[in-house]
Image (cartoon, rainbow, N blue to C red; front, side, top):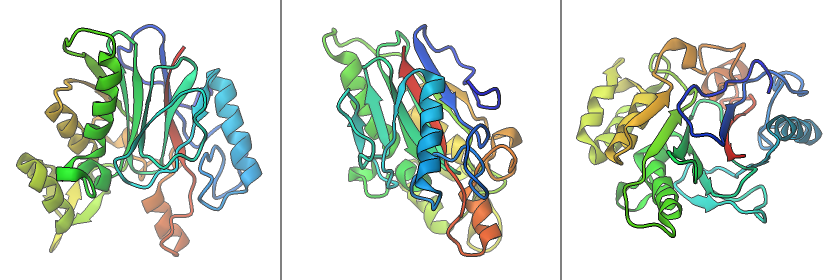
Amino acid sequence: MNARWLIPDWPAPKGVRAVFTTRSGGVSAAPYNSMNLGDHVGDEPAQVQANRTLLRQAMGAHAVFLKQVHGIEVVTLDGDTLDGQHADACVTVQPQLACTVMVADCLPVLLTTEDGAVVAAAHAGWRGLAGIGGKGGQGVLASVYESFSALAQAGRAQAAIKTIAWLGPCIGPSAFEVGAEVKAAFEAVQPEAGRLFVPNGVGKYLANLPALGRLRLQALGITQIYGNDGSAPWCTVSNPSRFFSHRRDAGVSGNGMGTTGRMAACIWLE
């Protein structure tokens, strides 16, 4: 692995591997320098494919890249799954097949069973986390946990499935300004989420995205949660030399499009 990539510090079981790429270690030119893995952000396709090949070689596993749409759809990966599936989360029991999500401010969430039988990855932007578009306000974490639990229970007695979660870098609570409608969307499902929004002007709030992710996971009964604690080193916006950031770089480009690359969070079974 590239020494500048982030290896999760969590009690994952033997045989479960995970990595979060940074912007280092690839071949893309500025402003995508250098490890851009997104094929939808304007980078040269050949450079993106070269970076994806570098990642797969470093992992010794096949990373499957989704077409993420800020929704709650989940795909179960097998040996025939191709890149480009429309989903924001994925789950697998197949060895050497990496559940992969791309981010540049949104919250990446990795899951594994305590016995290392099943792994999953979710891309949790605020819409997917709040359940916008999901039935009954169901968010992407609840959606992936349903698929994850179903695979974990397959062929077993109905015993409790012990799950471990890891949260990767995302936009931090000092940078994620949102409107009152975002606060209301979270409070509609979990009223206690309101405490994670700090007033920042008229009708504006600073939202703590990793804490909102933790709150959602805890509501699912997941208590072993590691990684992003909302502190400055985890913030994609405030660490430009290490992380891509859609919101930060949209301001730099002036076009509102966020000309920047994408990082990846991957988890797989050896």
